[in-house]
Amino acid sequence: MTTIESITAATIQLPEPEFLADESQLAAAAFLARYNGRTLDAYRHDLRGFFQWATDIGLAVLDATRPQIETFRCAMEERFGQLARPPRRTGYLMTRRHSRHPQPDP
Image (tube, rainbow, N blue to C red):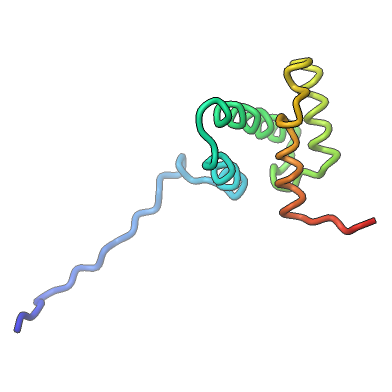
């Protein structure tokens, strides 16, 4: 029979602060994990723009309401014109928002 003289405890190191992700970043990463190629690039670009816009106006990304997302969409249309018009550009933001905070039926 073998005996173990000493047991060393494993330590878990926390990631460096620059690698910590908040809930909104984790949600974005989970969303983006389904895509690849040009679709992934497009969604990544859109989300980066939305995150920056939300930061600029002091809005927590996951607390965005439908009117706020519509305001972002309008800002994109003003900035990029026709390039911002396809439903892909902001429709998924509203879907994510409403699946997290269901709205009551009128």
